[in-house]
Image (cartoon, rainbow over all chains, first blue to last red; front, side):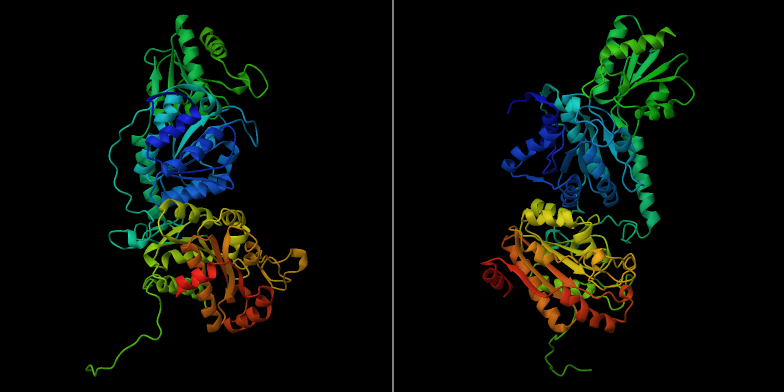
Length: 365
Length: 266
């Protein structure tokens, strides 16, 4: 197998999952992620791994629940409407502390929306839409290479925290093709999954194991009361906030204007930043890689006299609220959203020259 | 007392799989048949020597409590989703595991109907046990798809009439699926029916072990508190009103399954 491939983002997800040792995939057809499900349907059976097409995204997330409970690395992928159906499952996975990965290839919303690109699931991915009280890490790749590399990272973080992890892609990233270097990524070793459900005879100690969405409800030796469980979740959340923030900073040290964008819009912003700098404008860029936990500190560190922020999202503005929360009243936060697309039909896009126009408008003031 | 050489033989007892409940008493209500149904399943597993390979998948409802009562590896799924979870467990573990769900009627055929029907269509090699107590027990006795006509619930205070629709007969429905190997309906109202039902349970497990397809056993259970009856009156109600609308017996036993299952259950 070639170490270098030229593939779509959706296929890169699959290669990344294979390198992470993913053993099971559950999926339901939905555009624009179909290439992912079809790849696993084609390749996994001949690798001796499990592929199962579900009856709905509700089915997918609950099959994922079953597979993760057996201690194997397992995943699903979906898009906006399917993501909506998975919210109950996400909350249950968090209660049951089951590590697994969900790839969310965003499309236009709300409702059926469009089958084309958009970034409108930021809020539900980072803040959760199921029965409340849980958090999950959200990784935001911005290239085909990162779609590959973030899969083993996502599985590692899921196992490390025993919590679901979301990889937030979008239709542009999923459908575009770029060179991909397939490489095995190394992570710190993790303890064996002694908690996995295998049948009593399959444990060294012969004692029963159980995975429940009723932690805190039904007393167990680890969590005899509701608050003992909530306290455990609190500690886990705080550790993720402390240790797992990831971002990329370009030219921010001296920048007068800092662009903030993730995913496909980070690519557009990078183009706009380079054009602006070629024209002598001091523009930098801060790209959140973890959307939750959000790199608020990284943003705050760059607040200086005269600095301004421009958030670019292919939505009406969701991440901009997290930037505003981080910045407070200490600097202006501007926003460029999907109404700045180059044309009004669903294939309209926010191109770098439109972002450059906005950059100039801010810098002229 | 000195040992006078009397030979002792256990003639009655309880399955070793019941966990001791010093600090965690059986949470079921007085007169509830669900622990009796669970006991029949546990006895069947012990008699089939399948305990070590068994995985119990629980849904939400009164059967939720079994997670703290039974000494088996278990998985608790979202309300109605045990067939999804069990399908994945069975496929991922890849061995000779005996994977079964234990679900209430609401879990199984109301909120979980889609999961059940599709697991049957996929011929998943799992066993589904549906405990039918004719209402939603945990939440105070509301109308369920399996509430018999004439039965009073908190959301049909005048009794279920055809205006509320008709009860669903799940083993009969599932028997029409090519992917289903075995379906039956038993009841927990008498020792005779208990023994018959245990036979159905063993045949259902045997069908799974020889990978014939999905197997399904419904068990009619009394729910005295929510039926607002004494345990004795609820037995009469079960016999006179519930069983006539939910006939007992086997509805599908795939050709060849009988022989194989008889062999496997011997």
